[in-house]
Length: 99
Length: 260
Picture: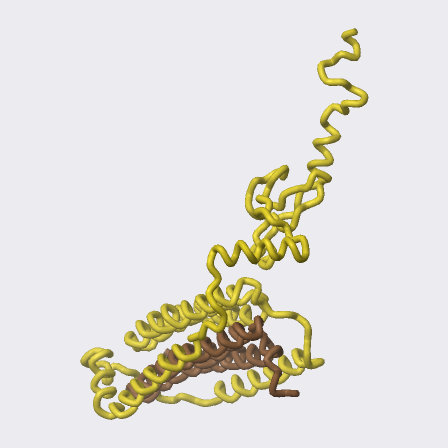
């Protein structure tokens, strides 16, 4: 089974997620795009584990999943708090530190 | 490899859909498709443990969390299309395109001459092999993970907790408030009008019609208005049926015109 298509797919998904973070303005959607980038890197890790013939890459992907779960919990709680005070989930509305 | 060529276009299309869909709920569902497809790709690549973890943790837990928060934040949490920084979208798309091109061309030129494969590493089964590494070489990282998870749980509890600053409103307080609104600025005292009265449908998404045929906006739930799924009041139907009905001025009921 060739390796390059998997890596190319991973690169594509990562760049799509990066563009999403730059373009979208709903904080929740931005978060989803960050998750997409994490998933893309996981795919690369799993593929490289197959190239190298050991399971270290799969362990790394597993730790990425754990950290992503913790990050999502805290991040969504922050978004909820911002939404509760500002009635908006748009990242442009949270601009109080700008002025 | 068949699974890859079937799933890869689906994944890329769904990922692009996340960029272009306006509603956040649709984004979450597209992301679910990408994640389930990724799980299948893990299974293809000799990682059955990660296949299960991907489905349980990502699609099961994280995406459900996203959907819960979307439900709490509200259905009208769609992106506004107004650009606050001029040209941001175009520039971001161009930079992203250049980045994707660079990344894809870069990784496509790497030659993987020998793919070792996981047959020897997975000889005693994938899960026992992962457990052996996880609890020997990576045991410290694994322990630190528990601290991270506890911190995350505590942080979420602290952030989601809300102190009650005002006393809780009871039924008597609500009634008094309603009367005060009526006295101050004449807000309607009674219940809201039910939807669908005099309309073609008696569904909740059809506004009631006033006697003059105009729709009554307060008769549909505010959630449906925010979601944008309110049907237009079929005022023309009222017009048409009133034209079809015999005009009482020219044609008295009972056919008494030619009877007498």
